[in-house]
Image (cartoon, rainbow, N blue to C red; front, side, top):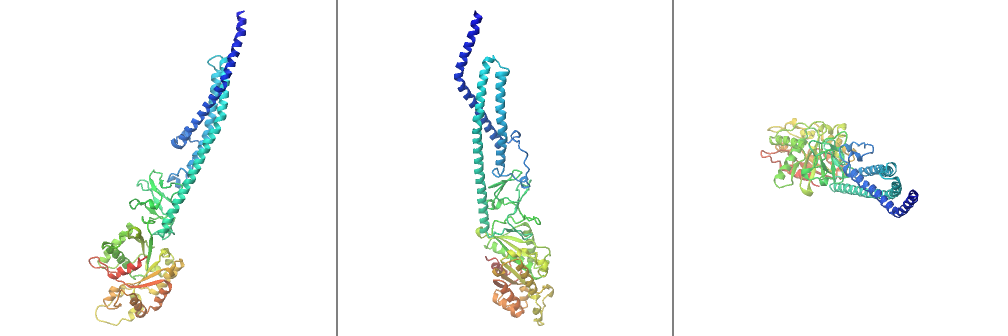
Length: 516
């Protein structure tokens, strides 16, 4: 009888307990579903931290990125590629984490409630089925939330990337505007190859690195700062480079690659070519011009600073030659390097390039074609040696006293030099009609000793008349005034006294040449 009662009572009690359990099933299902969803969402947070911040190997499953040449030298800005790569990484890892987490949860319920339960299956099976329902609910609730988070991530990344590109474009436009204000719309002049460089390449400032970065402007590799592969930061704008922190600039043309002036791009540039035949006195005149500027700076005039080591070394030699009243060596026929200096301070600061070219290039068409720097000049200097004119010697009458040393005269006819030079410069599309020409009549210190120059050395009209009537160069004078907008004539004496003071004619000549 007791057994019969047990067989009847136990099922009844079990069914009653099961019925009571069904009341709390929805709550259990909801709690388990929310727990799974919360676990998945927390996993998303951990993935976000791992992919974006920690960047350890377990958060890297995409194929390795193949860096471009410039990426070996600098780190890409996060919003110019790496951000979207991280988003793709998160999508891949999120799918894997979702499948792994839900799968592990179902397997844990199967093992703990069905395969190897700790209690009787009559108790664990209903609870296991409840957990199954909760896991199914969580598996359904989590994807929309995860998708919303990923979509929000993508939207924020897209907006920030668009903002970064807008900032980069604005900074580039501002930088370009500054270059226009500095009259560098065509770029900066390379003192070696004479090509205009839109933007120089710069070396990393760290002495142990020296990676060369081709374009440091705001963009893919940084907005306000570029981070070199060695970790060193670099400014991305010329306006962010202080005078003491300017980077070493290099020409970007593949056939050149030589160093440029560190002041390139930071101030307006002025190109001043010296044209003249062999031994006309160009190098001596250039040395006197530089010394006159240095003397003026020490006397309260515009500041004068040599722009690079090569210019400084050459100038020291030329200044010593002037001091001992010697004669400079003939200029080498190889393409010249500019003698560069910075004149003035503040807003009046300018980078001036003086070009002293071998006279042989002015009578050889192949040589003049290489003088590309002349197309950027708006003021030209034509050095005319009166002793190179045949009429000068034929007009001389025998006179007592020492005669002029004819070996100091240029052997090239000035009309030939001027004609070929103007043709070459015009072929380079230089606007001669809007340019000025300073005619420097050289070696007047020698001629003045014999009374062979006009009385008023500082008078342009007298110098012009002497060239036209005294030396028979009327056709040359007319050609000059026809080809150029403005022509000024100067009698110059490129000499200095024992105190290093240059002849007064040089100061007037330099002042006119460097006038804006």
